[in-house]
View 1 (tube, one colour):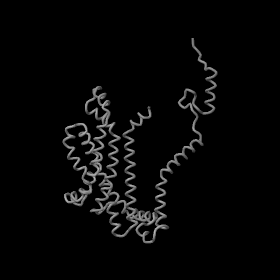
View 2: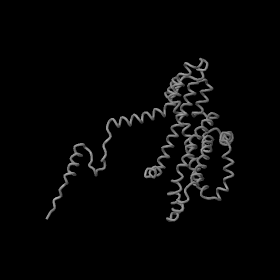
View 3: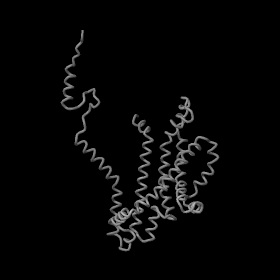
Length: 302
């Protein structure tokens, strides 16, 4: 004996309407109306408006840089402050000859090497100092002494001990980037909720799993704040070091162009440093969002 299942008239009518309109039924995954073309255009216009508002200040600054030396400054001032199109033309010539790429590569190699050494050593030492109180009390006076010593004040020391080669520049970049990462790592670990630590211990997590599952995820945002500060510091200190003694690099390009009275080339180097710093910050922000995805997931569930 078989039973024949029939669909109620209301359900059949709903399915028919959904097939006619191309939408899923009431129990389907997409029960709401699809966005129309006008709605999409409105959303795109809103995004474009917000992006335009955020970049308006930069565009106004570039316009002032282009028009100010031409129409507002005297001819003598224009020699030392050329308009933007002359700077971009000089940068294009440097790109064509390959000089800008060589200087940029030299600066990137030094900054990435010193920055990587600083981040790895500072994060490891910061975790140990924050976790072991006796180590914190032992190293804190020495760290405070070096932290309050200006990085550029030690540049002659590094130059005398390591020479004017790559070692001195990588070392001073590592020194400049070390302390922001170290201090923020210590602060990030010490501000972890003690209830989370006690709950993890009650679940039987050992020290390694506690660091992996609780301490590091909670401290990641604070650590990345220090990493972003260190990225900016490493670039600034490297440029200053290259101005003092180097044969390649963006700092060398800037100071050599100034001494050779190639003013547009000098501004092209400065503009390249600004773009490089912006790119580094965007990259670090992206890495922070990647490693902090669990916070976004938790926040979206509330």
